[in-house]
Length: 295
Image 1 (tube, one colour):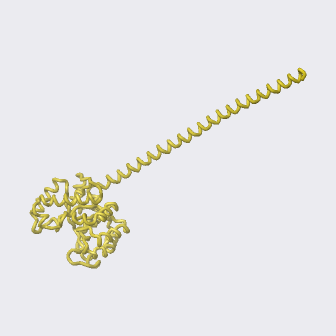
Image 2 (cartoon, helix red, strand yellow):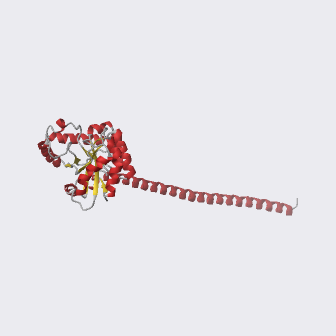
Image 3 (cartoon, rainbow, N blue to C red):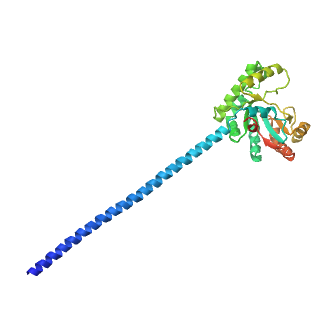
């Protein structure tokens, strides 16, 4: 092999080595660039993921705050405004009606009443018996969740027990509220509202009621009767009879508190309720419950 061939061979070998070396460097650079690109991509993905988590936490917090706000809004707060509202409930210029039901709940009557009220988008007030609440907690929970006002009608509805003393009236209230709280799962609930079984005015236990009302008020509990009845507790059984009773007093007032009952033997009340609602709507009344009063 001559010298020229040797030099050419050496030069080719050297060029090959340089080419391989350059190729390796290029590959390394490509790998580095790729890694950097991947890192940037992964970083963007990671940052996006972190942002999504933060947004989810913010949304979750908003939901928690909204639920807490809704929970607090359903906890009656007795203020001087509320006391004044109740004291002047029958002295309003606007026409409003409060549908109230005593002696419940009962599965046979309260459930269809709730169905009708939901269909008509009306919120009522239920003066509950604690002993009945313990029998049908699921109905009471539904009443609460659907925005009805849950007040106390005592625990037993046994007059000799309720009116044994002024203190026993307060005990009946407290026992009924304990039952309501357990049913709705809200231990802070207090309606600050009581309806004396048999009504506040007159009767055999008038003096006890008068003394009890003072004790109740000292404990932040007001009482309310009614100024219109359907007479469902004294023999009226048809919508026509209920309307006839309402006509005796409703025309005299702009603000009406209607006494009805949802005990298990008052199916006629549930059956007549659509006609009662129609009666008030035709006369321009707006339906309210005591959330608009106790605030």
